[in-house]
Length: 345
Image (cartoon, rainbow, N blue to C red; front, side, top):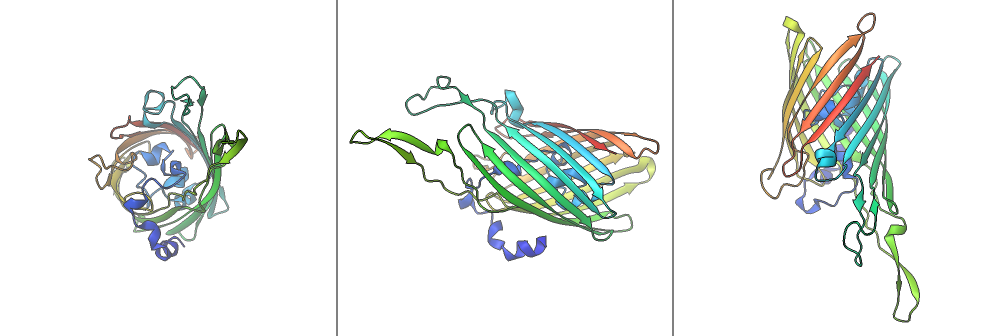
């Protein structure tokens, strides 16, 4: 389904420089999860569990019983960064339905703190109070294992953005597939198509103002609103597991290509190292053309790194709690940090 859709709409994935900055709801491109963001979201082929909501929803099918994840991200330095109080909170829950299906949901809420209100007549900050923009995405997904090798899924998003007097809302769809093969399923391939949906437009009392015409009559003027298309993207990823019997070690090497409809295309390469299924470390580098000069078009590329510490419990050790951390370096902006916890029971 994903491959068919991507081939039937090639114009969406041109990486056209003329379209940069024209998409709406670009918070959909921010990875809210500590695990997958620690290697730049390039795990399209090997995403597992709730983290797969961002990378490839097909990976949700690997939830064994029940999984709950919470992650907090201090975006661009959080309260000490360029954007005062910018933070992202994400809550996710997934439950296995039958032998092959997994039903999941998550909420991502992003806030930018208190920003000063300025007007043409009063441009000085602090004289008109403040406003607090908020962005929230509600996701409901279903993933299914067709065979031991083929997994697929779809995710429906409800998008809302609002300030005190302006708001916008819309819906979007993600879909993805994963294929794994080899004696120990060490070779993996994945495709995900994200943020397909109708355009957004803002409305509310903030889109109009009252003025007085030449005859002295008061009148309300309504601003014309332009529609904003969603930041559609296509991800294609490949990974390979190097397995070592001693201390149950695993080294996964992953690569990914992202074709963006409203940004330049990205290329990523990274790895995940696992020791005794108790400790995992990840790092990746995401590249985009002109990343090192003033023509850079996005902050969410560059070096990514992080780690997880896993604590099993239960009678058979089939339950676990893990603490997850990720670091994202951002040129010309303060770095982003994510801290989260994953509960499997």
